[in-house]
Structure formats: C-alpha cells, structure tokens
Length: 490
Image (tube, rainbow, N blue to C red; front, side, top):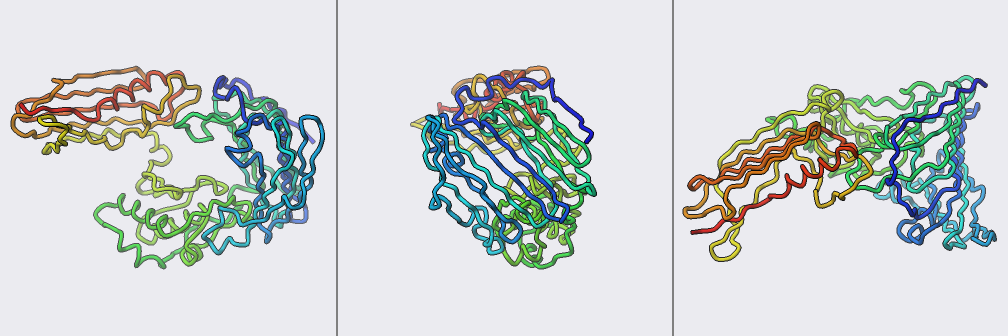
C-alpha cells in the first residue's frame, strides 16, 4: 500500500484556550470504520478515559455513563468490553444490571423513530483517578460511509486514532480541514482505499462564549466512499399537502417575510429529532412522511421546507452534508435559512461576505418612563442588525476567536419631547475607531423640544481574531454603554 504521510504544522497555538485543570482526559480515543465486500460495514469505537475531577461524573453524564444509540433495523450492537480500572490498579467489570436499554431523547415525540434504541452503560467502581474503558462495535447492514470527525474533543486526548477502509472496488475520499487556530499535528497515512490518522496530546475544545462554528476552530476530518452524491438526492418533489395551512401565514407583499413565515410554520408544527444520519442509513424522509408524522431529522425538515417553498413559488434547494447543519438556500434571493431554530435569514455563498449599509432616519414622539417627580427615563431601542454579543459577557482576556457580525449601521432618531423637558446630562459625544476592526459613534443633542440621537457602528469582521479582541471589546462596550437617557422637567 502506497502511504502518504502528512504532518499538519504551522498552526497557531491556542495556549490558554484549554483549561489548565481538565475534568478528565482520554488516554486513548479510537474510531474505526470498515466497509465490507458483502455490502455491510462496521463501526468500532474504544475509549479509555481517566477521571480527574468530580465534575466529570456529576456535571455531565458522558463520563459516569456511556450512551450508545443504534437502530436495530439497520445496526447490530456488540459490546466488546466495559470495565473500570481503579487508581490502585484493580479492575471492576460492568455488571449486567448496569446495562439499560431505553428510547433515545432524540427520538421522542416521533412515532417513526420509536424503534431506535439507546444503550446506557452505568459505570461502576468510579472514583477520582480511575480509568473507564469502553469498547463496542456497530455492524451495519449497508455500505455507505459519510462522516465528519472533529479532532478536538470536550477534554484533552493523549492519543487519538481514526482509521477507515473500503473494498478495492470503492474509492475513499478524504478531506482534512486546516483552521489556523490550534496546534494539532495529526499524522495521516492514506491511499485510495485506506486512511489511518493519529495524533498525540490533542488539546480540548474552547470554553469561551460567542465561539465561531467548529469548522472555523478545529481540524475536521471528512471522509466518504463513492461520490459525494451517493446519499438520496435532495430533490424536493412537488408537494401540495400543506398549501392550505401555509397560505394562511403568507403576506405576498414581502417575499423575505414569507420565507421566514414558512420556516416558522415548519418548526412550529414539526418536532425536530436530532438523529445522526448513520443510524438511518443516510436516508431522509419524503415531504409526505414528514407532513403526516409531524416530525423529522434536520435533513427531513430541510427537504420538507424546500418542498413547501418551491410549491409557493420560491426556488429552493437543500444544502449540507451528512445531515450536519443542513439548510435551505433560496437561489433567487441569495438567502440561506436553517431548520434548527428561528434564526434570521443569512446571505449564502459569496453574498455572505457582503456588508450592506443600513441607515434608519425618523422622527417620533418620546415615550417617557417616570422615575421620580420631575425626572424621566427615555429608553433607546436596539438598532436592528447590530451584533448580539453582550459586552457584559466578554472577559478582559480571550484565547479563542469570537463570532460577531460585520455591519455598517446608522440610526438617526429625533424624539419630540414634552414642553419643558431637558436632557439631564447635557450633550453627549462619543467616538472610538480602530483600523481593520471598526468604529462606533454616539451623538445625543437637544435643540428646543427635540432630542436627536445618532448612533453609528461599523464592524469589519464576522470572526474576530484574538489579536483584535481587545479593540473589538472596547467598541462593543461603548456601543452598549448608553441604552437610555435621563431627562428632567424644568
């Protein structure tokens, strides 16, 4: 076998991004995928995790318990070994009554998935310093493989191993992303049918707020056999089953609002079941099945949403891979919409990097809240389109990039005040600017019975690097420093 050895170097060190005292550490984390010549495949998983702090057992259950989801219709689960090694070296085997079979939480409220099972293994002999060993195999009655493996996990990994093999008559396609954030130096040996990846001393995930998507932070290994289109086509067939109900939420005067209303209709009336596509053989339901069952996976709901949008005159298609972060793109409007939450529409593709200037200019009557006799409070409404980052949640020092929103917004509002009401603080003029990061301007002035409030914010980056974080934090702090003004009746 011809081997190609790759060492990914030159990445920037995250440094203090990883906690100095992790709750647990994987001594070994191994994942293996093997596609067999008879049309079946096997997934083998093994971890050896050492418990370092009590939080690993109490704050989250993935160390004190191990959960394995599988589909009995497509997968056969074999538990190879499960035991605990105490700090003194003694070994505690898992008793039979510690194996609990149950319905996964991701399969509730959807009859189509009630056959899927979850094995909860309740570990025994647990104490600080112990090592939990779990080893199992899923034998699958299909040969498709399409996986994304994030190399960085929730706690450090001393040795990470990933291997994939397919028969000689198939081709293994491999992609390894290279985000310039953290030092991970995997060694990869690869040919047309096999892949072997290993990495030592992999740091743990960042724990900061407002983190960018994983693909912007961590190396992600994507592999599949055959061509990328091997999964069922995302071709939403004509579907008119929901037309009557959908037509009741539409406003034909605003296409963007109609798209959001249709998305909200899908999410309000259909339960989201977050099931990994591998447990369903990478298949998705038809729009009719989703409509009748009232539930579906992210891919199911995306196909259903695209079908409704097409039926209502919007040219829509499903995008995404392996069921992860699937969404629907409306080509004619260059918008992408998700199915996990009621998040705003975002621009798609090249249009995503465009920053549109938005200016709002209006004159309104001031709505005053009485504080004490003669004193009033005027709340300044949020400016639509500004980043949702809260300055109060930003630490003085940060070690991870920050997800923000590039914008160029200006709000110029003149408030008509009651006679004799004056701005207590006098005129306010604030301005701050940093090259390459952005600028903020706030101007509040009174002229007679009119109070003019001008607020401008311009941010250049959607993902703020650590090097610009301090300046970004100052800009956001200034932007959010004035959310009201105090007035006094003379």
